[in-house]
Image 1 (cartoon, helix red, strand yellow):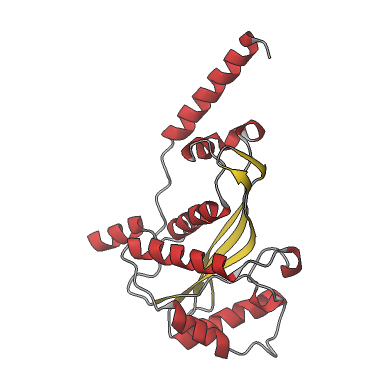
Image 2 (cartoon, rainbow, N blue to C red):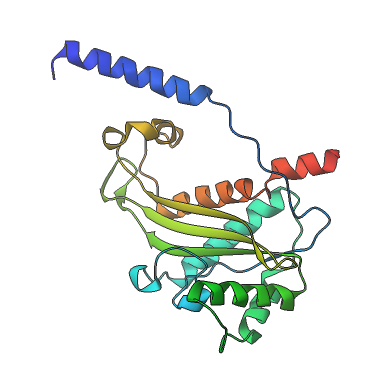
Length: 228
C-alpha cells in the first residue's frame, strides 16, 4: 500500500480508538438482590435439553473438560466476593441439583429447564439463583502474538427470580477473537488487551466480570448499596 494511502487509514484508526477510549461506561443496573438471598449454581456445560435455558442445542456445542468449569467457578466466586457479595455456597446448590426431579416436567424443553432450575432454587431456599452455563470453549492455537486458531467462548448467565418463578435478567457472551484488520469496530477491546491474542481462559474471565456487572451484582453495585 502506498505511504499516502496508509496515512489516512492510520489517522482514522487512531481517531476511532481515541473516541472509543473516551466513551463512558454505562452504570450497572440496580441490584435486585438487596436484602434477598442469592444462590450460585456451579458452572454447567449442558448436555441435555432440560438443562438448557437458552442458546445453542447441546448437540451443536462442545463438551468442556471439568477442570475448565472448576477454574470458571473460582473466577466467578472471586468476582462476586470482590464486591462483598454473600451467597449460598455452590455445594448447597449442587446438592439440590442432584435431588431435583426432571422427569414428567410439562412444556417445551426450555420451559422444562426453567422449571428445573427454579426447583433447584426452591430447594436451596434462596430468593434468586445465578445459573452460569458454558456452551462453547475453544482454546487458542498459538501464542500471544500469533495464532493459527483464535480463542472462542459462548457463555450464558441467568439470574432467576425464584419467588416470582421467572428469569429476572440474563447475560450472553459469544466471541471468537479476530485480528484488528478483520474487525476495526472492536479496536477498543483489541488495544485494551495489549494487541495480544488472549487465551480462552482469559476471555471467559472477561465474560464473567462483564456478566456480574451487567446483572447488577458487581462491586460498583455493592458500593452503591452500602452508601444507601
